[in-house]
Image (cartoon, rainbow, N blue to C red; front, side, top):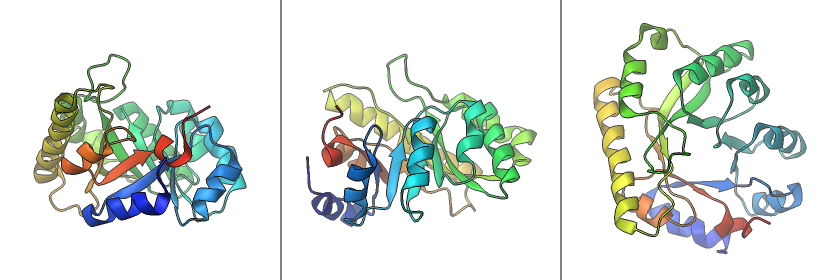
Length: 219
């Protein structure tokens, strides 16, 4: 574990935002981190996020960082600050629909499949470009694409991790210049977790998702 203030001091020079991953953690432990000044928390599961939102201070910015089923979007649409794990056009359209019902615009990141493991969710590059060229995409008014998210392969091979993160940054830059050149909000690259966040920052991450370094190992 690392003290929160120490971690924030490490992230500050690179202007990187910290998402404190609070999945499986009890309300009391989240409040401890909140009381040290942290305001952005990330949860993986809708059923766990909703009761935490209801119980905890309302100035917390909640990020959904786990796989979201389309039929669960309605439960987080009224309050979620960002959905980092948008992994299909179908899901994005459903988020837009539910956000419209709440008279909200929800910030989203497109989750890219950058890891070699088969279990990871995410768009391919071709799927993203196909979606962005689709006339239906231009009809979405209640979602705002703010950037990309990626989860690297679980490996001790730092060269591979660096290669995956670098590829995500390169694709972000390509999308920025081609589709989002006039959109200031398209600026986020969420990559890096407790084990690889330093490499991610070196490769251009603007947001890291850290749990065990802050809260300790799950258990």
